[in-house]
Image (cartoon, rainbow, N blue to C red; front, top):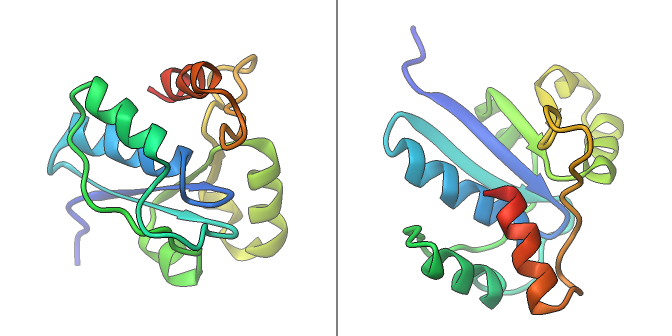
Length: 136
């Protein structure tokens, strides 16, 4: 059986700020030509995504859907052709925890060596938006 659609996964710590935004941006850009999903190492116990992420998507006219944070698991990894870790700590955790899937893992900003997509959860609104712009 030939796989028709490439599947991309994004992983951050809580699946609450960065990875859902990356998912929505890519999903909007490529519409139905890619399957895109997101997950977290230790997902936020909350429905939805950070309200600042929702605001960012709205301000940038990026369509979004209801989001429920979820934990990364082997099913997520099996269904993904490539998995982008949003930062180095996440990448290290993935490589250590899911050794059989290492060939699928890439650092989100691997092509921009000076760019670090830091966890914006505790940042000010202005700093949060800078991180979202870096993802975009």
